[in-house]
Image 1: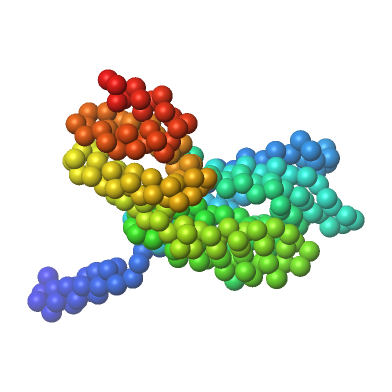
Image 2: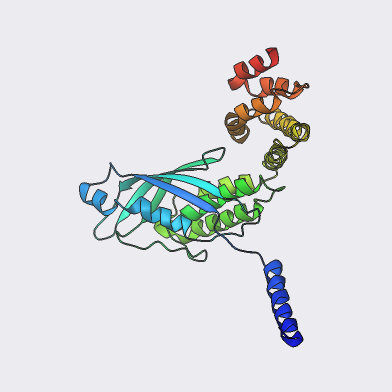
Length: 288
């Protein structure tokens, strides 16, 4: 290769490298699984909607919604229960949705009404309101918000704000299908509020500590101990905090294993007080 050609290739490679570093690489990080319960539909509608779960799964998994900053997948399970409320040629449904990450984030909504013509192709457009896809995107953003909070302090804010934008627009823009959007807006406003901020900050401490479990147990316990103290304060101020309770329900076994060989088991004594539902397992750890 002559010198002039070498210099040209060098600059092309540098150009490519510059742009690969200067702009985020967008990638799909949601891996969704959808099931439907159609038993309450008329037989003809059951047949028409037989492939609906497959279509919704494809919709979720084939659309890129965010930059994969931390190169991680988010797993989402969704269950849809449908009731037929069609009138004339217009196909309409009442629905309940249970959506969760199979771990520690879950939402349930029973106040959903949407239009869907059998054979419709579900398409993603964040600038278009739709009685079906707007609600799906709302809850996917709530799941992403909760997951990204685990990777950085309040890092899920962008996705909570996207969900709030959907709720604000849907509350006034979906006409006959606006039922429930008042409550959804209230939900996302709470998740973004100062009242919920301590919980979100606690999640960051906990998962930062969890990231050290395999390489430095003492460092892991240090951060997780801070998270437990934060949980103690959250529940002292709000004994019925459902997010703190759900967190403890999802992570109590994990916490026991983290402190099983620890010399200082003071954090376990705190858990014994703030998580009475799992008192037995904490007491066994302290007594052995």
